[in-house]
Length: 538
Image (cartoon, rainbow, N blue to C red):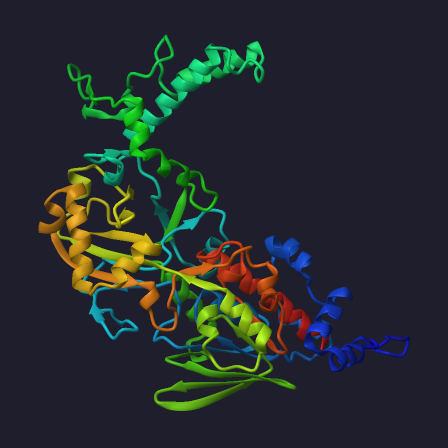
């Protein structure tokens, strides 16, 4: 097909119209990128760290007389809220359609009085006491994440989330462990024996081909300290393992924890599998959480956007591209309604969007279906006392287990208070599926039975209230995050990374940090830049 040519008498705007007529919106936008009028993928990657929000003055500079476009945003999760918030700064007329009765999407905080019904019709009402809550979705923020920038901008106070704690426990009965051990104990033993083995290999000359004499000396010095080795480079235990009697006043030097297991026992227990977690770029301390619950973030977004621009209980039933915009049909209060706009940003979960009628074409539908949902679930257990602090000296952090609880989280707020709420399981995949097949009462019983094995009878006798949430059973979400082989830039998902006519796609799945709010925000900001550049050039 012959391409339109730009000549000295052709304006950029007229030229782009001709490109659009000849090759469609995709060709027009690609041409805009080549002309420097729209951000290319490389440009977006380069500029993400220095993202500049659209401004009202941008339109004056382009001679548009302050006439931004009308945008309908499908989905009131973090990607949708970010899109509407940033476009709103430039005066875009944004309408958010959210199927659920609250904004936030998978950012969900459960408090006393909250009620939810899953896709199977099972309902729960939380009976947590005042001040107690569970973050059923995201619960932590790494200090480098852009999410914290929005906490600052929107006035959301934060506090430390204790992601790792030396006093938390590891218990792998599936690997032959007979009782839980503290993180500090497990680390001391693993590091000690690994250091001993490497020291023996070094002294035996096994590494002579890799190390100089000075290297060997430096390595042995490091290993002796790192693993708390003796003069003969053997590991026999260390105070790093903990104490049965803590050091105190004169006459009380403390009593170190005895019963050092053998090297074989330590490796067989598989306790070391948990250690790499805290080295993850997205998991390393310090980490943070909003004071009062993670939903303080979408609440602040909604306040800044304007509640009158957000329609909850609005389930989208059809999305249509038109020659000059989009038409989105939805139901609200039992009635069918329609929104017409210049552009649409679809932030629904892709597998949910795939079930929504649209005229975006088979390539889009195939790409949406290629993204598979992943499952995760949590249960909140409120207790009458904070026995884990009093008896186990655990103040925040996570206990790891190979039972199907996967993780037990201790609260990072309300320390030294009268009551507290534990996340009794945070499990994924097949373990999450097991709990999703149970009733809420059965989930509670299964979780408590296993928790008693780790913590004793108070895990049951002090229990005051519970609430379980299975993301695969959540209406309009039906999953916790996404499985995308090859990542968001893989060819299978290419149609979702481009505007399809007047429809754009955004969400954490179109980022390299799926399952994090940072990913949703980054994806939304990329689309905001693209849409804004397109409007300015039109």
